[in-house]
Length: 282
Image 1 (tube, rainbow, N blue to C red):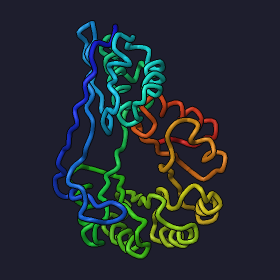
Image 2 (image 1 turned 180 degrees about the vertical axis):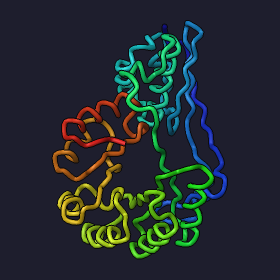
Image 3 (image 1 turned 45 degrees about the vertical axis):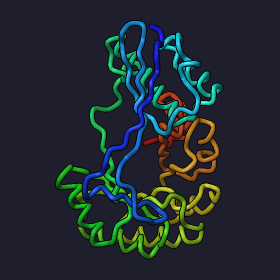
Image 4 (image 1 turned 45 degrees about the horizontal axis):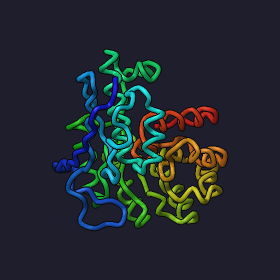
Protein backbone atom coordinates (compact mmCIF):
# COMPACT_ATOMS: atom_id res chain seq x y z
CA UNK A 1 0.00 0.00 0.00
CA UNK A 2 1.58 3.24 -1.18
CA UNK A 3 1.05 6.86 -0.16
CA UNK A 4 -0.78 8.78 -2.86
CA UNK A 5 -1.53 12.16 -1.28
CA UNK A 6 -1.06 13.96 2.04
CA UNK A 7 -3.13 16.97 3.01
CA UNK A 8 -3.22 18.99 6.20
CA UNK A 9 -6.05 21.14 7.54
CA UNK A 10 -5.59 23.57 10.41
CA UNK A 11 -8.55 23.58 12.79
CA UNK A 12 -9.55 25.44 15.94
CA UNK A 13 -12.18 24.03 18.28
CA UNK A 14 -13.77 26.64 20.59
CA UNK A 15 -13.62 25.94 24.31
CA UNK A 16 -16.98 25.76 26.04
CA UNK A 17 -17.30 27.03 29.61
CA UNK A 18 -15.77 26.16 32.04
CA UNK A 19 -12.83 24.98 29.91
CA UNK A 20 -12.30 28.36 28.30
CA UNK A 21 -11.01 30.92 28.34
CA UNK A 22 -7.91 28.92 29.22
CA UNK A 23 -5.26 30.99 31.00
CA UNK A 24 -1.81 29.45 31.14
CA UNK A 25 1.33 30.50 32.93
CA UNK A 26 2.11 34.11 32.12
CA UNK A 27 -1.50 35.25 32.46
CA UNK A 28 -3.20 37.26 29.78
CA UNK A 29 -6.78 36.96 28.59
CA UNK A 30 -6.43 33.27 27.83
CA UNK A 31 -7.04 31.15 24.75
CA UNK A 32 -10.56 30.50 23.51
CA UNK A 33 -9.98 27.25 21.66
CA UNK A 34 -7.70 24.34 20.94
CA UNK A 35 -5.73 24.33 17.69
CA UNK A 36 -4.54 21.32 15.74
CA UNK A 37 -3.47 20.05 12.34
CA UNK A 38 -5.69 17.31 10.89
CA UNK A 39 -3.70 15.15 8.48
CA UNK A 40 -5.29 13.00 5.77
CA UNK A 41 -3.30 10.36 3.90
CA UNK A 42 -4.81 8.81 0.79
CA UNK A 43 -3.36 5.56 -0.53
CA UNK A 44 -3.35 3.64 -3.81
CA UNK A 45 -5.51 1.00 -2.10
CA UNK A 46 -8.30 3.56 -1.46
CA UNK A 47 -7.56 3.36 2.27
CA UNK A 48 -7.55 6.74 4.02
CA UNK A 49 -5.60 7.36 7.20
CA UNK A 50 -6.29 10.24 9.59
CA UNK A 51 -4.00 11.81 12.15
CA UNK A 52 -3.73 14.87 14.38
CA UNK A 53 -0.62 16.95 14.91
CA UNK A 54 0.26 20.57 15.57
CA UNK A 55 1.65 23.47 13.58
CA UNK A 56 1.68 23.49 9.80
CA UNK A 57 3.69 22.10 6.93
CA UNK A 58 6.68 24.34 6.23
CA UNK A 59 7.71 21.86 3.52
CA UNK A 60 5.36 19.88 1.26
CA UNK A 61 5.34 16.31 2.65
CA UNK A 62 4.10 14.96 -0.69
CA UNK A 63 7.48 15.69 -2.24
CA UNK A 64 9.03 13.52 0.48
CA UNK A 65 6.61 10.61 0.92
CA UNK A 66 4.49 10.30 -2.23
CA UNK A 67 4.80 6.75 -3.56
CA UNK A 68 6.40 5.44 -0.36
CA UNK A 69 5.20 2.37 1.53
CA UNK A 70 2.65 3.20 4.23
CA UNK A 71 4.08 0.50 6.51
CA UNK A 72 7.60 1.94 6.50
CA UNK A 73 6.93 4.34 9.35
CA UNK A 74 10.53 4.46 10.59
CA UNK A 75 11.64 5.36 7.09
CA UNK A 76 8.94 8.01 6.84
CA UNK A 77 10.02 9.65 10.10
CA UNK A 78 13.65 9.73 8.98
CA UNK A 79 12.72 11.18 5.59
CA UNK A 80 10.47 13.84 7.13
CA UNK A 81 13.21 14.91 9.53
CA UNK A 82 15.71 15.17 6.70
CA UNK A 83 13.16 17.03 4.57
CA UNK A 84 12.56 19.75 7.16
CA UNK A 85 9.15 18.73 8.52
CA UNK A 86 8.80 19.79 12.16
CA UNK A 87 7.89 17.31 14.86
CA UNK A 88 4.41 18.78 15.40
CA UNK A 89 3.14 18.21 11.85
CA UNK A 90 5.27 15.06 11.61
CA UNK A 91 3.32 13.53 14.49
CA UNK A 92 0.10 14.02 12.51
CA UNK A 93 1.56 12.26 9.48
CA UNK A 94 2.86 9.41 11.61
CA UNK A 95 -0.53 8.95 13.28
CA UNK A 96 -2.26 8.90 9.88
CA UNK A 97 0.20 6.27 8.65
CA UNK A 98 -0.64 4.05 11.62
CA UNK A 99 -4.35 4.60 10.98
CA UNK A 100 -4.01 3.65 7.30
CA UNK A 101 -1.90 0.61 8.13
CA UNK A 102 -4.42 -0.57 10.74
CA UNK A 103 -7.31 -0.16 8.33
CA UNK A 104 -5.40 -1.99 5.61
CA UNK A 105 -4.63 -4.89 7.96
CA UNK A 106 -8.13 -4.79 9.53
CA UNK A 107 -6.49 -4.51 12.95
CA UNK A 108 -6.68 -1.88 15.69
CA UNK A 109 -3.47 0.11 15.93
CA UNK A 110 -2.86 -1.14 19.47
CA UNK A 111 -2.32 -4.63 18.07
CA UNK A 112 0.11 -3.32 15.49
CA UNK A 113 2.02 -1.72 18.35
CA UNK A 114 2.24 -4.95 20.34
CA UNK A 115 -1.16 -5.53 21.89
CA UNK A 116 -3.57 -4.22 24.51
CA UNK A 117 -1.79 -2.99 27.63
CA UNK A 118 -4.87 -1.89 29.58
CA UNK A 119 -8.62 -1.77 29.05
CA UNK A 120 -9.24 1.64 30.64
CA UNK A 121 -7.28 4.88 30.77
CA UNK A 122 -7.83 7.82 33.11
CA UNK A 123 -7.78 11.29 31.59
CA UNK A 124 -6.73 14.46 33.41
CA UNK A 125 -8.85 17.62 33.23
CA UNK A 126 -6.87 20.85 32.98
CA UNK A 127 -8.40 24.18 33.95
CA UNK A 128 -5.53 26.61 33.56
CA UNK A 129 -5.27 29.48 36.05
CA UNK A 130 -8.40 30.74 37.81
CA UNK A 131 -9.17 32.41 41.12
CA UNK A 132 -9.25 29.95 44.04
CA UNK A 133 -13.03 29.89 44.42
CA UNK A 134 -13.55 29.56 40.66
CA UNK A 135 -10.93 26.82 40.52
CA UNK A 136 -12.77 24.88 43.21
CA UNK A 137 -16.10 25.26 41.41
CA UNK A 138 -14.55 24.20 38.10
CA UNK A 139 -12.99 21.14 39.74
CA UNK A 140 -16.40 20.02 41.04
CA UNK A 141 -17.98 20.61 37.62
CA UNK A 142 -15.27 18.58 35.87
CA UNK A 143 -15.92 15.73 38.29
CA UNK A 144 -19.72 15.82 38.32
CA UNK A 145 -20.30 16.69 34.65
CA UNK A 146 -17.62 14.54 33.00
CA UNK A 147 -16.45 12.13 35.69
CA UNK A 148 -12.81 13.22 35.90
CA UNK A 149 -10.80 11.84 38.81
CA UNK A 150 -7.54 13.61 37.96
CA UNK A 151 -7.34 17.41 37.84
CA UNK A 152 -4.64 19.81 36.73
CA UNK A 153 -4.12 23.51 37.25
CA UNK A 154 -1.42 25.70 35.86
CA UNK A 155 1.04 27.32 38.28
CA UNK A 156 4.46 28.93 38.35
CA UNK A 157 3.68 32.67 38.24
CA UNK A 158 2.98 33.24 41.94
CA UNK A 159 3.60 30.46 44.44
CA UNK A 160 1.30 32.00 47.04
CA UNK A 161 -1.55 32.15 44.55
CA UNK A 162 -0.77 28.58 43.52
CA UNK A 163 -1.03 27.44 47.13
CA UNK A 164 -4.35 29.26 47.59
CA UNK A 165 -5.74 27.59 44.45
CA UNK A 166 -4.53 24.17 45.59
CA UNK A 167 -6.01 24.65 49.05
CA UNK A 168 -9.41 25.65 47.63
CA UNK A 169 -9.51 22.68 45.25
CA UNK A 170 -8.39 20.22 47.91
CA UNK A 171 -11.18 21.43 50.18
CA UNK A 172 -13.71 21.04 47.36
CA UNK A 173 -12.72 17.58 46.12
CA UNK A 174 -11.32 15.82 49.19
CA UNK A 175 -10.38 12.23 48.38
CA UNK A 176 -12.66 12.09 45.33
CA UNK A 177 -10.01 13.32 42.91
CA UNK A 178 -6.26 13.86 42.66
CA UNK A 179 -4.93 17.35 41.96
CA UNK A 180 -1.71 17.71 39.97
CA UNK A 181 -0.52 21.32 39.52
CA UNK A 182 1.87 22.18 36.68
CA UNK A 183 4.32 25.08 37.02
CA UNK A 184 5.99 24.66 33.59
CA UNK A 185 9.36 24.98 35.38
CA UNK A 186 8.32 28.43 36.61
CA UNK A 187 9.81 28.27 40.12
CA UNK A 188 13.43 28.82 41.02
CA UNK A 189 15.04 25.77 42.67
CA UNK A 190 14.76 27.42 46.08
CA UNK A 191 11.12 28.41 45.61
CA UNK A 192 10.31 24.97 44.25
CA UNK A 193 11.49 23.24 47.42
CA UNK A 194 9.64 25.63 49.74
CA UNK A 195 6.45 25.40 47.67
CA UNK A 196 6.60 21.60 47.40
CA UNK A 197 6.74 21.31 51.19
CA UNK A 198 3.64 23.50 51.52
CA UNK A 199 1.87 21.63 48.70
CA UNK A 200 2.65 18.36 50.44
CA UNK A 201 1.07 19.71 53.62
CA UNK A 202 -2.10 20.43 51.61
CA UNK A 203 -2.25 16.81 50.48
CA UNK A 204 -0.82 17.28 46.98
CA UNK A 205 0.91 14.07 45.96
CA UNK A 206 2.08 14.89 42.42
CA UNK A 207 3.47 18.06 40.88
CA UNK A 208 4.51 18.61 37.28
CA UNK A 209 7.66 20.57 36.37
CA UNK A 210 8.10 22.67 39.53
CA UNK A 211 11.52 23.90 38.31
CA UNK A 212 13.77 23.25 35.36
CA UNK A 213 15.45 19.83 35.16
CA UNK A 214 18.64 21.85 34.78
CA UNK A 215 18.56 21.84 38.60
CA UNK A 216 18.48 18.10 39.32
CA UNK A 217 19.54 18.46 42.95
CA UNK A 218 16.41 20.47 43.76
CA UNK A 219 14.12 17.98 42.04
CA UNK A 220 15.83 15.07 43.77
CA UNK A 221 15.27 16.73 47.15
CA UNK A 222 11.62 17.35 46.26
CA UNK A 223 11.28 13.65 45.53
CA UNK A 224 13.34 12.07 48.30
CA UNK A 225 13.26 14.52 51.21
CA UNK A 226 9.80 16.05 50.74
CA UNK A 227 8.15 12.98 49.22
CA UNK A 228 6.51 14.83 46.34
CA UNK A 229 5.92 12.79 43.20
CA UNK A 230 7.65 14.75 40.44
CA UNK A 231 6.35 14.54 36.88
CA UNK A 232 8.51 15.94 34.08
CA UNK A 233 7.13 17.14 30.76
CA UNK A 234 9.43 20.02 29.83
CA UNK A 235 12.21 18.75 27.59
CA UNK A 236 10.76 15.25 27.22
CA UNK A 237 10.72 14.35 23.55
CA UNK A 238 12.77 11.75 21.73
CA UNK A 239 14.51 8.86 23.46
CA UNK A 240 17.85 10.66 23.70
CA UNK A 241 16.21 13.62 25.46
CA UNK A 242 15.20 11.53 28.48
CA UNK A 243 18.52 9.85 29.22
CA UNK A 244 19.89 12.66 31.42
CA UNK A 245 16.55 13.04 33.20
CA UNK A 246 16.54 9.36 34.06
CA UNK A 247 20.21 9.15 34.95
CA UNK A 248 19.85 12.16 37.26
CA UNK A 249 16.80 10.56 38.95
CA UNK A 250 14.77 13.78 38.75
CA UNK A 251 11.40 12.23 37.90
CA UNK A 252 8.89 9.73 39.22
CA UNK A 253 7.09 9.83 35.88
CA UNK A 254 7.82 11.25 32.44
CA UNK A 255 5.09 12.92 30.40
CA UNK A 256 5.90 13.01 26.68
CA UNK A 257 3.76 14.85 24.14
CA UNK A 258 3.63 13.08 20.75
CA UNK A 259 3.85 16.42 18.86
CA UNK A 260 7.07 17.22 20.74
CA UNK A 261 8.51 13.76 20.08
CA UNK A 262 7.36 13.43 16.48
CA UNK A 263 4.74 10.72 16.91
CA UNK A 264 3.80 7.47 18.59
CA UNK A 265 6.94 5.52 17.68
CA UNK A 266 9.33 8.11 19.15
CA UNK A 267 7.25 8.12 22.35
CA UNK A 268 7.45 4.32 22.49
CA UNK A 269 11.22 4.44 22.08
CA UNK A 270 11.44 6.84 25.00
CA UNK A 271 9.22 4.54 27.03
CA UNK A 272 11.64 1.67 26.40
CA UNK A 273 14.51 3.77 27.73
CA UNK A 274 12.45 4.85 30.76
CA UNK A 275 11.49 1.24 31.42
CA UNK A 276 15.14 0.39 32.00
CA UNK A 277 15.05 2.88 34.90
CA UNK A 278 11.65 1.66 36.12
CA UNK A 279 10.15 5.09 35.45
CA UNK A 280 6.66 5.09 33.84
CA UNK A 281 5.65 7.45 31.05
CA UNK A 282 2.13 8.88 31.07
